[in-house]
View (cartoon, rainbow, N blue to C red):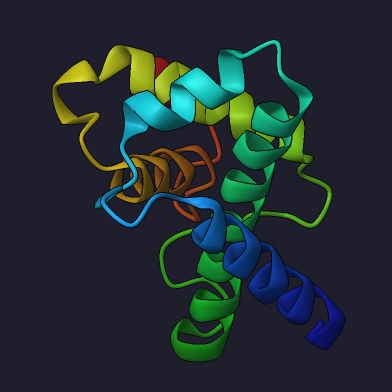
Length: 124
């Protein structure tokens, strides 16, 4: 777990350092563009952002919320699944694409809710 957190911290540092100083908030539109890009580096950033956010959510929930305070992202969930859920959610909620972290947090919380593990609700 410590290795995972260290890796996530290093990745966040690298991607933060690579962003322009005026970048401000990382938007859902920026994240979607990276996910849809043909550029491998952009695809890696897309997946790393989704995985880092999901891992942070999981750690925070486990650390402060007990077994499952509101969601549970199983260790078997792949980065590709996280990206696909994020893309589907962002496409169906275009009015809130100004904040990638908030959108993905909402998408992951709904997709892997402790109370409802049904992904079909996400797309409705």
